[in-house]
Length: 281
Image 1 (cartoon, rainbow, N blue to C red):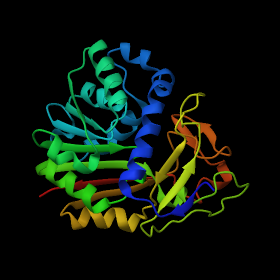
Image 2 (image 1 turned 30 degrees about the horizontal axis):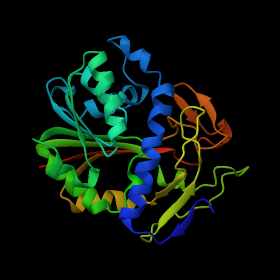
Image 3 (image 1 turned 135 degrees about the vertical axis):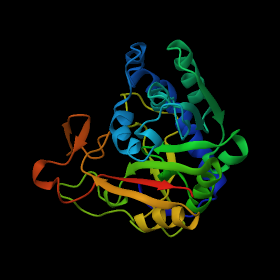
């Protein structure tokens, strides 16, 4: 059953997830509207939403000239957008097909970027250099079992004084039954080390289907996310929660400018995203 908690070895879950994400690449290449990037001024909606928050905590209030590592970058649309916003970018992802699309797009639109194929949990050993900013957004850490190891990679990649930024789906949202007629909790908010098993041929973008439909995710409450970053030595400088999402979590969500939200009567009842900005001393 979708969302059931099961015991599975990390490597087996990771391999299943990789096959699924490799399958998504051609679907997302077609669905992401890559031709828009032929306009040299175009940046993704995700980065356009993230930049006003991130920039508040950067030297000079901007990315210009900063070295940035984008973790779990997928096909690179947000990475290229960050480069267009002034950063020297390195995109990290575990999917070789995704990085090939990212590199081809960057070359086509004449954006300089470095691409590194590695699991995010091994990022420090695979990526050369250190960074002013480590960035990840959105739909990322549900795919990771060990957040302490994840946070350790972030700290090791950052220079002293560097900034970490994440915006992601809120764990309270992810505990809801996406098909219920009301806001109804169905899935675990608190994790117990087991993975949630999913079987879904669709993806969040486009109409195509994937050959490898089985995936595994891990629920992470806010306390675990914040705790991992704090235990790694980062200082939290900003936390916020949002009412909209870049994807349609539930069929009941309605389209709003730049994303989706619950109907008006429910919009203040449950957060859709959280944003954390943290700094390394």
